Image (cartoon, rainbow, N blue to C red; front, side, top):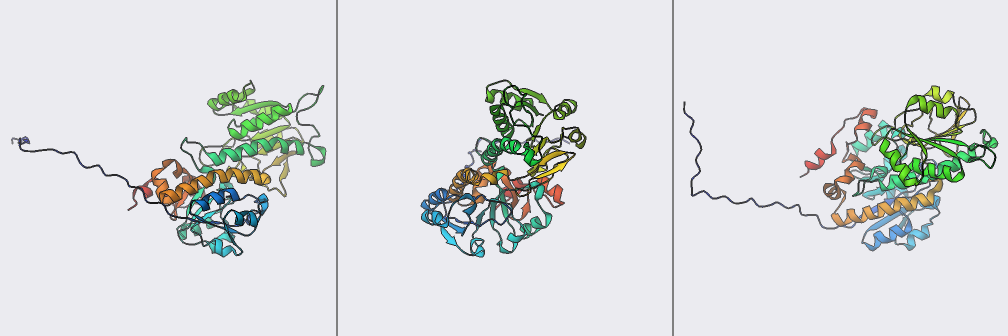
Length: 404
């Protein structure tokens, strides 16, 4: 059987197909609510008065619950002078389509939340509860975690700012708990002339680790840094401008250094999901009595096996005669500085959202922002959370691509 080949007639003509352009939506005013946080010891606020003034000048409305800025030493008058509307009832603030919080949604928030609302807040993976997520999903909530917001340069600006605060605070905390009056070993962090310097081990060479190392060196401590990424160790050396003792995370070497140190800082994080556990309980048992562990990765589960979640009121637990500090929201202890840093990023994001016609539009055009979305119109889009809470996972990119 012969096959007839297709023929092209000379009268055929070909034209290029018209290009279909993605026309952006027009700008629209936003109504943003800032509730007063009820979470234990949360003192930060998502937008400071100066940022509110910028948003109001751009045509947006900001509704602030009375007392929302108190923990950061901002008064209702400061917000009113900036153009915010002050609400004396929580329910009024929760009517806003967009909520900006500095603590994750909790059970007490659920009765006030509206259908199809957008929540911009932190996401504490170690404390997340399945029942809260289920109710957020039922209300078709879209949730953006501020620590996972990416900028155009693929950096995490809020996470970096909070990491800088934590890294700077770590050595202040360590110095406090090494004192005899806080059940510590009774050594001065850094040491003095004629006395060997305090030994500090920092696990993790990212931003938090770098700032912890900077402060420890400035106090005169002997510092040793571990990380599972050689590039991060190289970058740390370059940023410090001096040589420091560094090593990849090899269990025997790490255990040996922990055995003789006074301060151990856990600042190792994974890009997604839980922080890796690199220090076992056996390693902790061999540490010196009165030494201190500060696990700043506790909000992602911690990288010490013996870490427990604590708070600013009861910040420590003692295991195997070693002090464990496991407060997840260290920046809340420096609330005004932290609020200014958060507000710098969220103010710009809110202006962009308004200019581009809403959050859905901005994540369509700015792919880097998608990593921060963990709920999208009620669908859970974070794989790690879905595994932890045994809930259905949906790929965010598919949801966005399927929009009408």
